[in-house]
Length: 197
Image (cartoon, rainbow, N blue to C red; front, top):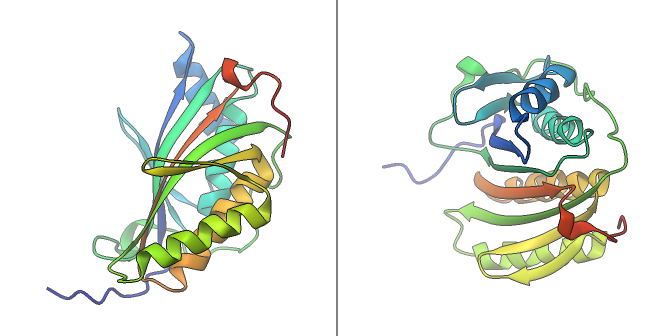
């Protein structure tokens, strides 16, 4: 088996959106409908949604979906996996030959708490890379806490997503196959009194 992955430009994000309300269907469908999806390939099934394309568009769409889902004030969580590299990506179901300008732009101000785990797959110096990105989060002012199996990131939705996109792109420049799992929580009762970072 070839352990040297090609540096594929295709970025994917598979996520599950979970509004804590009995009207969850309209929140999920409404968020997807309000989001400009023209620059990504998308497929939704009974468990999750996957979007694929250029990095800037995948992160733009992920941020917009979460932002639209939380406008109601309901507690919403989003869990998902960003991935780039081998072995399963193909050019058949993605949009790469599109504008580099994000289709959704800036999100409204919103406090977001999140946790992420970073996996620079196949890199023998993976822990050094992970520690570098934790230090980067502290520099950006979005680091919240160290914990088992993850690191906490919080703040306003714009700097939080800006950090995740920058970290993902920084690591993919060093390692051909990168996976990053993230769980976001917005409008949680436990966030009362939290200020935007």
